Structures are given as C-alpha cells and as structure tokens.
Length: 212
Image 1 (cartoon, rainbow, N blue to C red):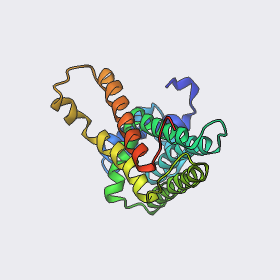
Image 2 (tube, rainbow, N blue to C red; image 1 turned 120 degrees about the vertical axis):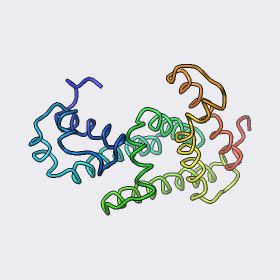
Image 3 (cartoon, rainbow, N blue to C red; image 1 turned 180 degrees about the horizontal axis):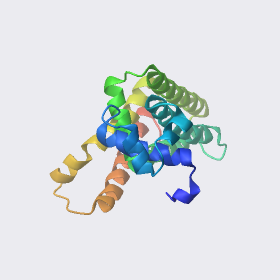
Image 4 (cartoon, rainbow, N blue to C red; image 1 turned 135 degrees about the vertical axis):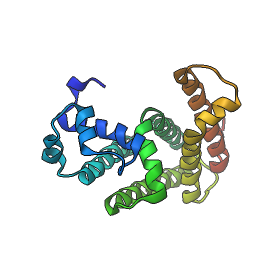
C-alpha cells in the first residue's frame, strides 16, 4: 500500500499489525511500533491513547472492512442466492489470503482472548455472519434456488473452519505436495482449489443444482 495514500493513523495501525502478528500483543512495545511506522512515540498516545486502545482500533478497523463487503453482497439484486454465497466465499478467502498478519492475530485471539472489547468484536462479527447466511438461505429456499435447509451455525462452521484450517496448514500442504513453486504462485493455485472445494461442499449442503 502506498504510504502517501494512507493517513498517519492508518500508517501506525498497519505497522502495529505486522508486529502484533509476529510477536503477539505482549511481545510488542509502543517504541517498536513507532520505529516501524517511522513516527515519534508520542504520536501513538496522541492518536490512540495506549497500546491496548491501538490494538482494539486495529481489530475494529479490519472487522468493519469485512462487514462492509458482506453487507454489500447481501443487498445486491443482480445476483441470486447461490451467486451471493459464491461471492462471500471468494471475498472471505481473498481477505484471509491478503491480510495474513491480521488473521494470524485473530487466530491467537480465538484461542485466548483476554480483552473484553476484542471478545465483543469477535462475537458481534460471528453473529453478523450467521444472520447474513440466515437471510440468504431463507431467501434461497423461498425462491427454490436451494432445496436443503442445513443448520446455519454448521454452514458457518464449514466455511470459516475450512478456510482457517487451510490458512494455518498451507506450509504443511506445500511440503506434502513437494511443491517448490514461489509462495505467490503456490498461493494462487492453493486458494483457487480451496474456494472450489468449499463451493462444492456447499452445493451439496444447500441442495443447489446448477443446471436446474
């Protein structure tokens, strides 16, 4: 990202994101963040107040980005319900692929979130996804696009669980496949196959037939 195009506040957030992903919240100092962002340490206090508040702001910033893309898809009238599901999978997968640092932080938070604000953000985001899938499924059943009605929480688990497990296990799979391609090249194939795989599972779970 071109640093001329982002604000000082975002510059600090993105520097912190890299360090939090690498060293964890406790292992990262405000001095290190200031150094990576190339700002005076007092700027962190000025914009955020504390390291804790900076961390909360980062999570809020990234979570909101995710909410915007999903809400936009649900409201679209040029797509049927299956196409909306496909778009959500593609965009969700692309976010995990391109925002590796943030999702590494989130994986850690899922296991031992201690900040109540972060716990609340995570819960709110999950509930929002459940509500979104519910709306799409209900609408798809009414229109006949879907013929099966799986439990929504399991649908969400299938999508998120598969994406996150694949994200964590990517290096192991690369080794298993004896793939010597550059990371970017391997990523392209890996995430293309992953998206196809999830869509294949969901077609069966939702009873969607392409040529009906």
